[in-house]
Length: 338
Image: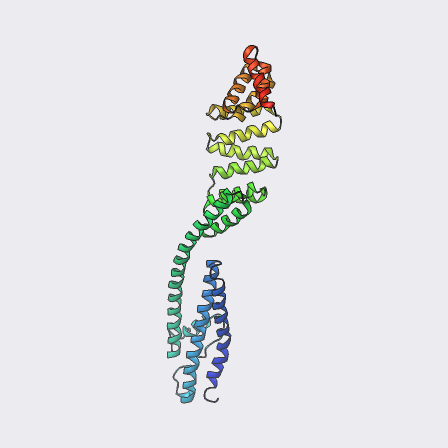
């Protein structure tokens, strides 16, 4: 073989690795900010390619020198560098069964390169991981603020998008999935909202607001049985959560099961929850059941919280006699004027 022939062979073997090395660096530059895992992957390819290039270059240079001296002067078995993708063939060659380690300067250099490359790659990954971790936290906070701004401006699609970006940097934050679910819920994307609430509950099984909002989704879909089940799960570990009680009551009310509905409404009322809507609903149910005294009391409480509900004044004018009844009727007529 002519002097330098082995070197030419080594150059030819190294060309694909130069190409792989260049492409991996190009991909690293283009997709640097896309995903940390992608950066680690392309960086690993670049490091491995560089290792193969240096290995082939060093070994073919020495092999060429040994060829000039004559192959019979070498006291060790000829070691040819491999162009294989899996470099453990080189390791297998170094640590053959009939040896205890490197048998030549070539093999020693391969082993040193391998150990140094492995240690360097570990340190680089640690450094990059810490850098990306810091950047991810900062980016997540920035994306969260943007999402909140869009949500407050009722731009729910944009809010959902930026909540998703925030989740990339903080994937174990149940609150982010809950708030993204709320964006889908307000944007009338019920199935997507359910997915987000389920993921929040996977992270935090007692995230009661996600459980409750699942009930709201089912209520909006008129799946009242499932809505009741979700609300009862919340009440099981948070018995004072009045919104869940009201949700159960609303489900029964929409199914015209008024006796069951008023029981749940009374539970929230007993817990101290007060609103004009609740008092009006309860008053109406007791009115239809013939419990006039309870109905009048609740009607009065309803208008004490909201004095603009004309229908309540109309009904009180019908139920209450005397001058008080006349006042209710005059107020109803006043509210109904255009």
